[in-house]
Amino acid sequence: MNSYKGVHALVVGLGLSGFAAARALHVAGAHVRVTDDSDDNNLRARAAELSAQGIEVEVGGHAVATEEVDLAVVSPGIPLETGIVSNLMGAGIETISEIELGYRLARCDILAVTGTNGKTTTTELLAAMLDSAGVVSMAAGNIGTPLTEAVALIGDGGAIATEVSSFQLALTQDFRPRVAVVLNVAEDHTDWHGNAAAYGAAKGLITSNQGPGDTLVFNREDAVSNSIAAHTRAQTVPFSAVTAPRNGIGVADGEVRWIGEALMDSAELSLPGRAGADDTLAALAAALSYGAGRAAVVEAARSFHPLSHRLETVATVNGVTFIDDSKATNPHATLAALEGMTDVVLIAGGRSKGIDLRVLKAAVPPVVAVVALGEASGEIVSVFESLVPVETESSMSAAVRWAFETARGRGSVLLSPSCASLDMYSSYAERGDDFKRAVSSLKAERIENG
Image 1 (cartoon, helix red, strand yellow):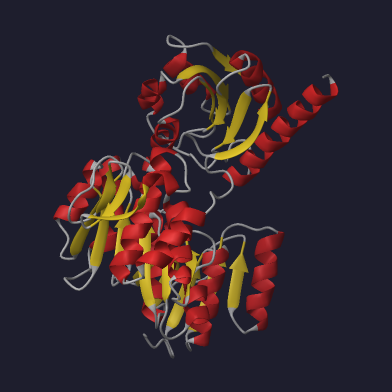
Image 2: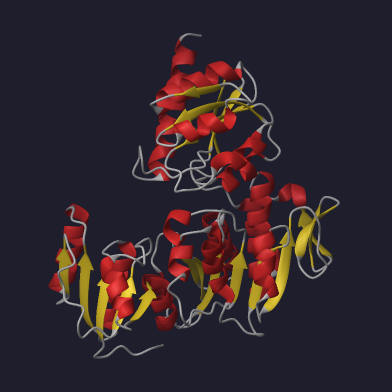
């Protein structure tokens, strides 16, 4: 655990992670200042709480001086070219992310999960497996609870299943998880990283400090994951949903096999589809590599339920199944969700984040029709218009109704947007909740009309 007594620290950003970082540094003895160029009621409430503890806070701008700063902690999602961050880095001031700070303060083991898709589900499942095995643990990081808060709660011993994003990894220096997981890497967040190569390189930082005593779990069927594994010093454990690698975990002949031995029937995996199998296999490999007992982790794999907005079945109306996959904010996630489905009417669109959506052409089949929403609706139309019927709608309610009528009593209506939600909604959860409300309204109407 690092000592920060007397260190002059500047926290940039007063979101959940910035708030937690400021408190953790204050407890560790640092002189802390916080700055955020946004200004709303939530920020002011956090600012008031920190100010009451003697922490200097400014909101609505970055007027605070950066002189005499020994350490800067930058909240995830703030671009590195932002004026204040660029100035800090240009002045040679040590600039790190909140997960780097959390790692330095930790007195427990860190098990870290990254990837373009499936991070949250895998992290939650890994935490459930550790808990089932009797390990003092919790899920933290990009999943919700900041790592700096979690390490204080867990204290000595135990382990934290930590979801880490490319934004967070980009500002790590010493971060060294006992077990690291790379689920998959596909084009995403190029508006922040600049290009796909830089995004992939940031993901690879999860294992850059690992050594022979650590473990890297990687997706054998993913090219970038394989490349990351080829350059690590850690022990490598592959996972695959289509074969059973002898030195890892996978599926063959209806069995999940761990290091060549049967672990459970593949039909017992609780998460649906290929994406669900990948997430479960990765979590199993991480937990078993950490030393968790087989019976305990298998029980967790059998009983775990999908989280909201991740391939969540909402309802069936007149033979049409409605599925909420609002968490799918890039094409790779949507294509993974579609594996094994038939007769799908897809609802897609939002803010594309600079991602090339043309790869979605591979969604036909099973996609038989598409509803386009939001800023990227024009891009969605151009992808699908020569392949299947496409309709542009301005509201989720209208999208659900058109999709239902088009489905004609069979198959599925899948909300899997391939885009961020921030054009029409404040989060993917709000978007998914709107979808559920629209489906509920449609179902009630159909019941009332007989």
